[in-house]
Length: 182
Image (cartoon, rainbow, N blue to C red; front, side, top):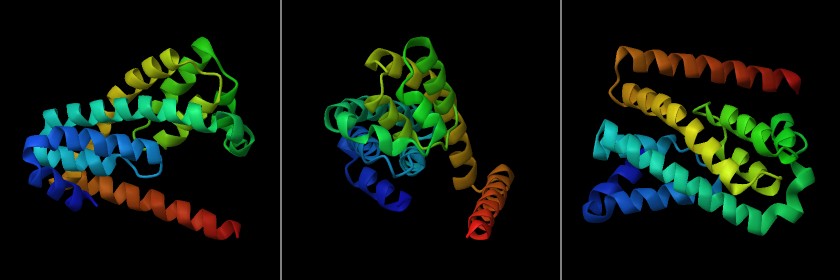
């Protein structure tokens, strides 16, 4: 997927930043495609810092657009379906400072399901302002960690290889636990 994104951004050089932002917004709305692919493409096409900033802007705008769309379209239909996710369920009824802290803490994890946090915030009681500030503050360190990791992996450094090994071990443990539960 990353290769296709790089190809699109390179083919539309004059509009590459806008295309990147639009793809990031689409990823945010869909909520199931990890942003790591667009971050990797941005780093490869724009360089480390410019790519990181473009990814941050895309994720932030995407989170706002998604929040608004989810709130308009899903709020009255989906509340009970998220009960199986304890942190997400907690977020549904949380407001103000507590919501800010909860969203911020969930945003600090770079590989956390961002779409789920946005969705739960939108159908819950969280205001757009609280969501926006918690998301922006939480996305900064998370995206810096993600960009650094992606940069190390795509440049195949020793740290990148270590990241791949750790992710592989975590993935293997996760799969083994899922299999053993069945």
